Amino acid sequence: MIGFSPTEEQDALRSLAHDFAEKEIRPVAAHHDQTGEFPWPVIRAAHAVGIMNTHIPEKWGGLGLGCLEASMIAEELAWGCTGIGTALEANGLALEPVIAGGSDSILERYVAPMTAEPRMAAYAVTEPGAGSDVAGMRTTATRKGDRYLLNGAKMWITNAGVADWYFVVAYTDRDAKYKGMTAFVVEKGWKGVEVGKKEWNLGQRASDTRGITFTDVEVPEENVIGKVGGGWLLAMGAFDHTRPLVSSAAVGLARAAFEHARQYATERKSMGTAIAGHQAISFLIADMAKDIEAARLLVRQAAWMKDSGQRNTMYASMAKCFAADTAHRVATDAVQVFGGYGYSSEYPVEKLLRDSKIFQIYEGTSQIQRLIIAKELFERAR
Ligand SMILES: Cc1cc2nc3c(=O)[nH]c(=O)nc-3n(C[C@H](O)[C@H](O)[C@H](O)COP(=O)(O)OP(=O)(O)OC[C@H]3O[C@@H](n4cnc5c(N)ncnc54)[C@H](O)[C@@H]3O)c2cc1C
Image (cartoon, rainbow, N blue to C red; front, side, top):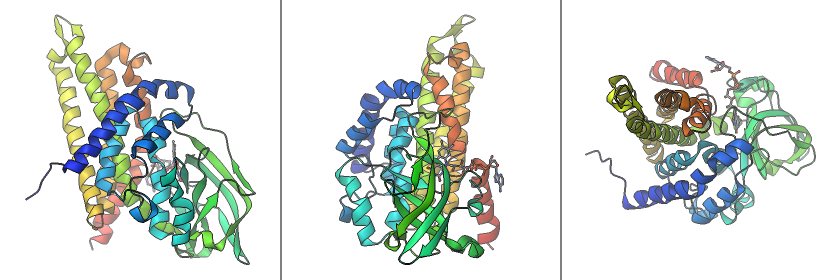
């Protein structure tokens, strides 16, 4: 039998995250959108109630929760505001490969402290000239005695301005292509690390995105994560866990847009009736509800597969692609339901439309998700 009811524990977590989003996130969402200020007060409060970094294993002081529970929390936080949600959740992308490949001493030094107090980390893979084409990266780490000299530049790194450390991938052997990439933990205060200015993005402005430059940064060999040459697998493998979470955030945004649109459609009158009485509008809203349910089911399946030890790469990409496209379409249609008011920043759906676009870009664009799905269908299936 297949069950769709959450357990009592899952339901309690979901409602804790929902109450948090309602009381701590929604009231300050517009402020952080307008100022771009990093939401430290929200981060501190989220850490205090225990809804950050929930998958850090118990051995390192965390809750050791699964991807499914984390996806329920992510949806609620994003329902509050996806800019703040991304700020709260981006640690997960840096933590995942370090938890998967780091030695005990690395986990003790970098992961455990994140459970004790609100600290941030960042995942630094994208470069100015290489995003989708990860193998096109130019950053190198050259062995010198018991250290590596790191040189290069990363771009669009979420949390870069607030993180204590970065998960960085660089070439240790360019000729070996994917097998020549190695992962490191690099501390923000090390000589030669320079963090750029905050990017002023279309949406999700509470989230901090910057470039980072590395000039002859000395990285001790104990800060290699996993095997030398194993960086690609660690960096890409992290997405099996994090794509269901990003997808959940897209579902949370879509749900918020849908709720605003449904409410407005019952209040706004046109040609003698509430606009919900016009089939053109009620069908738009029916499609929103249908697609949100479908996206959530894909997300939950991808998360459940991850937790039950199954290979979920294709399902994580399906969830990410479908949820991202749904979020952007639902937000666009919500603006349509609001008419002229939808275009104004005085009303909530304008921000949701701006915030929704990035879901089709970060953690792999919607085109790249389709590429992964097609590869899985045609290459792995053979
Ligand atoms: C706000 C924000 C936050 C981000 N956070 C992080 C982060 O924390 N860490 C990190 O490492 N990166 C981060 N990124 C980077 C993000 O993952 C990349 O922007 C994304 O992967 C796309 O890479 P690109 O921007 O270089 O675009 P490109 O790879 O240049 O792509 C341009 C266009 O071409 C398409 N395209 C490219 N190759 C193909 C192909 N083979 N087939 C079909 N279409 C293709 C793409 O889909 C896209 O539409 C972030 C980006 C943004 C904007």
